[in-house]
Length: 474
Image (cartoon, rainbow, N blue to C red):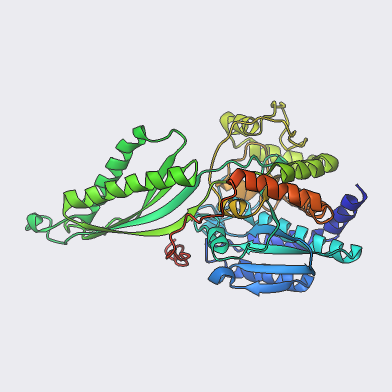
């Protein structure tokens, strides 16, 4: 308990500069692999804190890593700082109001995510020095979580080979240990090439690439009846062939996002989608080529680390809000539907408390929520090394992520309080591992049991490279 109190004090001492960092990142929203300013701000903070800094991790210009300490186990704390397109919103405003001249926004709270993780790592650095113990803490600044799968490339290229455990978090409505369930996924671009012609005078000479994309979409839609119920397939047009209806479109491109419960099921589903694309090309006498943009594994939990993090949460208690925090959260909650709010309670498995607008309790260890499953490249880290993830309460209960409401709450005092709170949870978990070799050994044994002792296999093709250009046209 005393050590935890010491580490929490070290976190509190950093409150002001890290709140400033989070707000600065909020004000410069950058999309995946284009986070040059955000990465530079994190690098500058690492240097100011005295970390040994490595840039261009895994050949990714916006990936940065800082290490402190000597010898002993290696504890990784993961941060993110990419934003999303189309989610610009003025801070604190409870109606849709984009920032003038800005289309992007931190609609998933990654401005808070990176700042809290770096804050926790810096506190652990000072704790190691104050207590004269061996051990190393690393902050990994991980770009492109929103679709780019940077962590997958970082893991594949060896950035986590000597890490003992990894710790991370994600903003949420509630404070608790994350239920490590997610879907494996891949993003694949299908590019069709046909033949242009005059759509009226010589339609018989044309071969429409746009027709091929539409036929592919129809085929995939029919396939949905015949795939696992927890699988998901989404698509977006990247190139619809032009704006002239009197020209047969000679090129068209569609990006497919395919999700499944695990990598094995994902690969089977991808094979079927590829066959449909080949069939669409055959029917239209076009050609089709593909490019794998990203691929991520499903998350793997770790019982010993979950228990250690839960113990820190239980000792710390829920974040402390004031009446102004609750009043502002109530204003944002008033913009939500009843379904938004009830879904948030169901997800964490806690009985709703009428009138509660901010998290006033730590989610109990035995809570059984209803999974609402997305995907994350943290999954690949969790297959490589034992990993634990917290949920930090930073917004009004029910706030949907990837929404203007989340962007609008990203600079509120409540968001800052939740960020500091979860930094304490992560830092406390890290030092529990640093001073208790048995915890790391148990975490590794649990990890080996879950993986069957098999080494990590990347879902990325061997020749796949980070899609550094994927945000250029957004």
